Length: 199
Image (cartoon, rainbow, N blue to C red; front, side, top):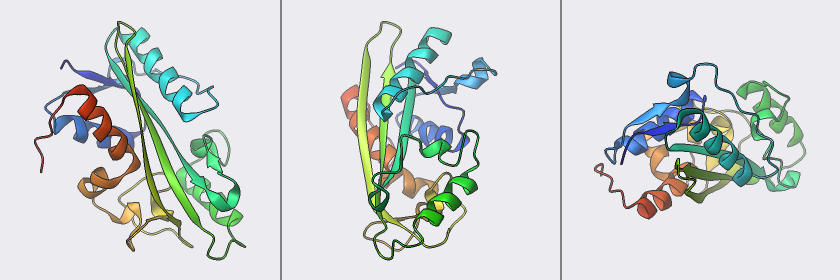
């Protein structure tokens, strides 16, 4: 497979995807390495729509196959918030810490009702217009306070179901094994006929 453009400016996601593709012997190129000023507005009402918007825009801009994702945190006590608005929960351009603080504030009276899941949608689009989309989920709960320094986004306040660690307390290779993006990637990897060389 030829190199894949990663249609994201998020350094954390870029590191995850680069590691996943590298394990299968596929080179990746961050889109901003080609187009430093590249930006695309996420106007979709679902994760699926946003992933496709970004991937298609990257293909149009570069002429190369492109992978994009959109992911969100869905907290049951809050009726699914922040969901598709996870990245801008505390406002456009909000820092991770601001989004986390707002979410924890809204859960002040939640007690033990802190169950949540992450969903990730991946979209790989080729210059021909052909696309492959996959979905992955990770279930857990929201902690009372942030823990860990290895993740990004809501990772420090998301404790993985069946364990006692947040995503930010896990090393990257472990997170890449169990995360929502990893689950979506495993389905895509199989659909593309790729084989991981990492065990």
